[in-house]
Length: 213
Image 1 (cartoon, helix red, strand yellow):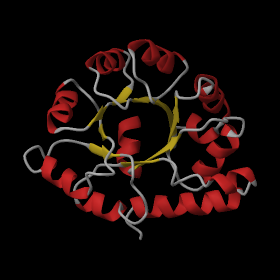
Image 2 (cartoon, helix red, strand yellow; image 1 turned 90 degrees about the horizontal axis):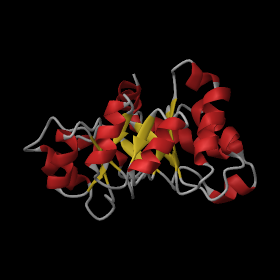
Image 3 (spheres, rainbow, N blue to C red; image 1 turned 30 degrees about the horizontal axis):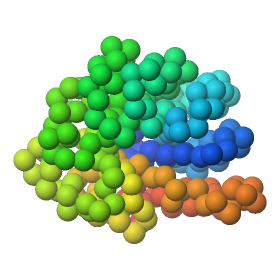
Image 4 (cartoon, helix red, strand yellow; image 1 turned 180 degrees about the vertical axis):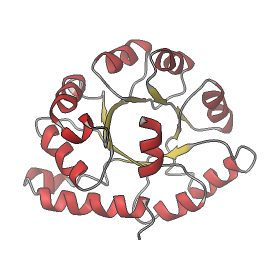
């Protein structure tokens, strides 16, 4: 179900934040704008408790129309933390077969990070549900197309440098989904608690990923 939801919405919102005190209202705002997959990163050690709280409090996540996961997972120990707190999917910036294996054993969707064709193939062969191509900023959409030419069965999620201007190119190249981070949450809007502005930006990304732009 989690994988299908990500593949359908084609968007994972990456919430890498120093301050998670507004995490619940951010989640409500993004989900209300149509975002269906939220990723809180373990760069903030409060992320596990935030994920637990959002899973308990958000009705969309409870009824299965949205999901919440943990990102920036780099070790087996961190993978266990992610799964223990209720993360519905695990995202890593690196290729780790140990992380993939543990997630598969626990029936949790896993998206390891990869950069080269060899890393990408290694992750897919190990059982990854999607491969996070990261960082894709200097690679561009043509790289996704070139990798998929000999391996069209891959589900690639370019992340790092994806924005409204290049989303269509990534999907035209065959990307299964995209990860969007800092472009999605405007710092000034957050400081002002301007949830209307945040929702408006999120709606643009949702529309772009669904091909409405």
